[in-house]
Image 1 (spheres, one colour):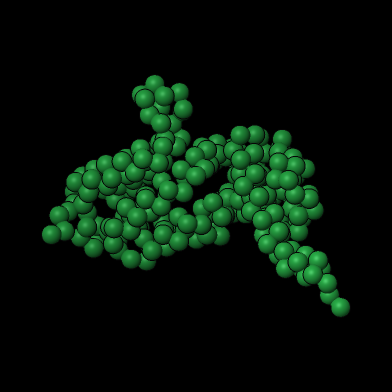
Image 2: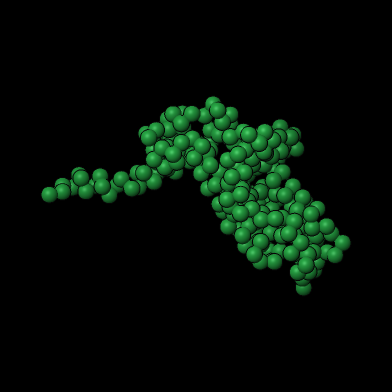
Length: 216
């Protein structure tokens, strides 16, 4: 006969494991963005997360698997919207993508800087290899084709270059998070949620007036 204590333990176990997975991903991201990959051990991650180190093997296999999953799940909200942008020639999806990017990166503001650092590493570096694997697996669309589709659909001014549109869009979106903190401080900028909301609306107006034709 099963007693109340055993029943409680069985019911609670799935949630405890789910919480452990979430804690491992959260603390892994916090460590990877401030420490070199080689210096972040699975033991340190488990210690910071307050869970048994065996949970890393259970959920992710090893440190590489944990790092890859962390990158993949951090990028997933943007991936879903990027699919919409690529499949539908609607300029509003571009602005929604920027909105989601600001919202998600405000939770982990050091992640974009981690991406920039990793992509400067040699192709053989573990972090870069894992990042590129995630980008490939997630089916990264061709941004040139994406903006080309918008131009073909009549959304862009006839005299703008879709490739340069891509550069402007990425620069406006990513710069606040990769700019040196000292530079932001020098200009009195603090990456608060309210500031990012205001910057988002400003960028939307800027892009709308500079790149998009009047749709009325």
